[in-house]
Image 1 (cartoon, one colour):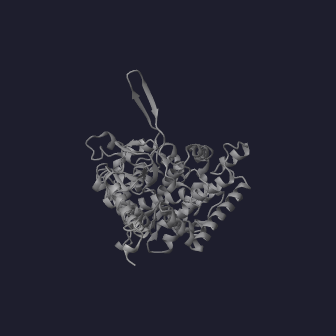
Image 2 (cartoon, helix red, strand yellow):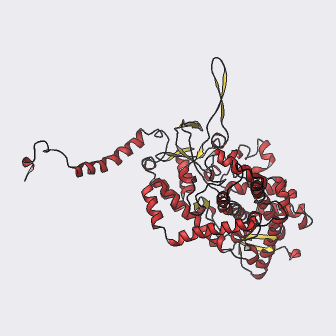
Length: 530
């Protein structure tokens, strides 16, 4: 039977299969053509493949190289780069005020001046909506997208992180920093080899948060090893990136969840159970000083249901805070010490300042360190180069669109902020890749002859700005001051002998947080203190 035997109205009509085949081929081609030439973001510079598909960007994220790849893209294409069909990356200092601060503009017409308050850039649900992998499916103060929900949670928690609260918490922090010094002294005395300081920093910050958050330490310092729960939290970060990234393709996301190994589900369930156990245990007793839990309990006792956190919200909060309040500070300490031992000049100057300021270790307090010039310069430089969150997960332009850094972005555009790139931007910093604490000296701000006079210090915002600025920054600064000062007071540090043991920070991968590696350093107790 040939085509002439078919009914006349069927002859020459394409088959359904051929239509589907044509569509399968033509649609991606037409979609790619549209994305490159007619999409609202088509004027934003960037690689053609990124304009066509999100795959290259997501692949870079999953490999852990996104911050490095994006730095190269910004160096080539400028401060605003199109990294996916509907997403841009921004590495320009003005983004902090234009995206993260309340936006007020004055519009002048012939009769009057109107003040316009622009809508917020809300967190992108793809990345911020609770995913259930480790912290359940309830939003907390870190992940909350709705501004009113976030404001309520933050209002409850804020009293735990004020300067006044920190004063009453200082004895607790001092106790763990002193225990850190004791453990490092034991390790340095017992071995002639170098010490990996990364683990000790993590032990300390996790123990501090365990005490301030749950009323009891994780005993990492006491036992000189990771608490099993703490050790498991690190692997979960990478799993979260994989789960969230597949949300761009719902079918793949569904299959990933379907095929997820039982061990990962078990780890997530165990994490939630451990948090719930710790939370309920903390609720059953009072501590002798205000801690992170105190205002939460107070709000529940007051009986104001419109303010108080539910049990699900409390569990979700502490699931996230375990890492957010601990691993981040440890990352900055790790990077800063690694750079100090590789730069003997700044290390010697810091050592002289600490040992020349105090006659006895007992004098080293938060208030005594708060205004110590060179210590703060060192830590600010550490926060610039070793910021624990190298990229800020995306937010979305409001529905009506918005102009950011001089470029109009249509409503719904996803926008990520590249702190790693900004903090190493040659246009912003003299010798941008170098560790130079003097760039933060007061005279660098006022002396026009200083090579650092034109540095864009406003580009470095390690604790963010606006309503979503880090609640725990006072605690973070206290830990940075005390740990750095007491280590330098008690020990002489030096670079590892073997070049293979010297950490190159730029080689580290990032999965939301930096995946730190061992930092081997020589450690010798001060002779007369030993």
